[in-house]
Each structure stands twice: as structure tokens, then as C-alpha cells.
Image 1 (spheres, rainbow, N blue to C red):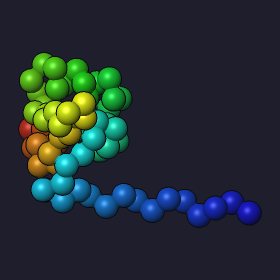
Image 2: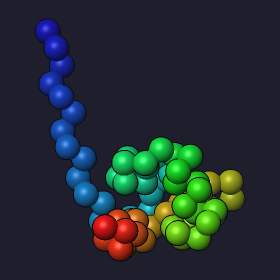
Image 3: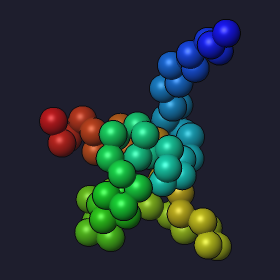
Length: 67
């Protein structure tokens, strides 16, 4: 018997912090493209030790502005 499909992920709350993998899923880009956007100043990112985090509000803003 096939397991039920995963439910659609809930949209992020504006104050959520996301990893690069989560951001890539939301935008439909590869993780490498997310790093490129960060490196070239298109997406603001924050480094906490060795971990890079992005604010959901910044991703939503980028998504809205790039359409």
C-alpha cells in the first residue's frame, strides 16, 4: 500500500528563519542558486556561527519583486 502524499507545506510566517534548503524549496531554485543570490546581494542572509539563515520576509519580498 502506498503511503499518503506529504501535505502541502504551510507558508512560512514572516518572522520565521529559514535555511538555504528551505529557501530553495520555497523559491523553486537549487541550493547553489540560493548561495549565488546571497553572494551577489540579491537575498540578504545572516550567518550564525557556521549556519546561514534567511528571513522568510526577505524571501517573500524577493519573490514578489522578481515577478
